[in-house]
Length: 194
Image 1 (cartoon, helix red, strand yellow):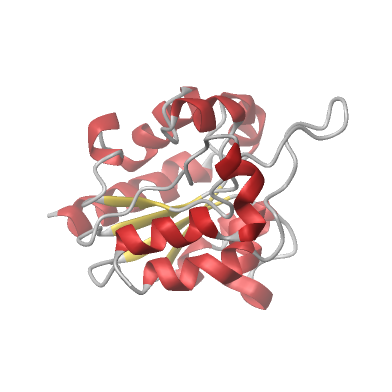
Image 2 (cartoon, helix red, strand yellow; image 1 turned 30 degrees about the vertical axis):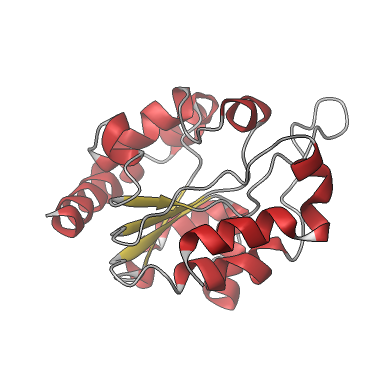
């Protein structure tokens, strides 16, 4: 199945009918020569409406961590951006933020999509949902423990916290993230894209 056929299959899936009927496109990017996969949670409402993932303050922070420009991050032959759900899941209860990705979505679509990306060097796992799915029992007891143990997941995975500007307190409590992990991540990205 080609990448275009896969996108059509995702849109035609009855489980995605409400989104397709609303005119939403599955929000992921992937080119056949992508070198790095970025797995996050699910698109936010604004990203879904704009049709572009990670083009916000969090995306700018992510670009800084990766050492790439916004244009490079959004080049599908460099980065495949593959959230745990390709559609905005809706708003949660008051004060709780967005709903989590739908169960079963990644299990159904990620293997089929990633099978068409033979040049991938490694995968960046942003947040607990991506880490739970890809690392399973190998992950730490907490997100911080998982990210702090990043070396044990190399060379296949780099676990990260969400690059939200709201995570500044977490980063202040965990200076090793910027001091140790980010330079290694930038070096790995540079090598993968060379």
